[in-house]
Amino acid sequence: MRININISEDLLNQIDEKAKALFISRSAYIATALSQKLQNDKLMDSMPEMLQTMKSAVELEKTKRVSSDSE
Image (tube, rainbow, N blue to C red; front, side, top):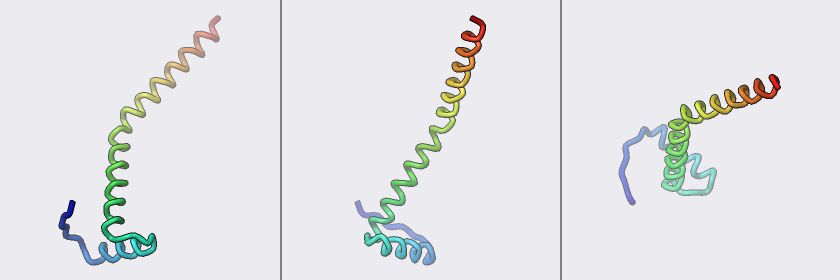
């Protein structure tokens, strides 16, 4: 799908430099960069749930150790 965006000249120059270094088009670079950004955002959105799961796992392990130590 084709879209139009407004960006600064400096940002465009940076994009063009990176795309050229990777031997890909400007469009391919922007699409890849946006895809990576969205993946990172999704990961960050799930971070609180991941931390809670880790805390629960640590608490479960502590409970197991206390139970085995008391036997």
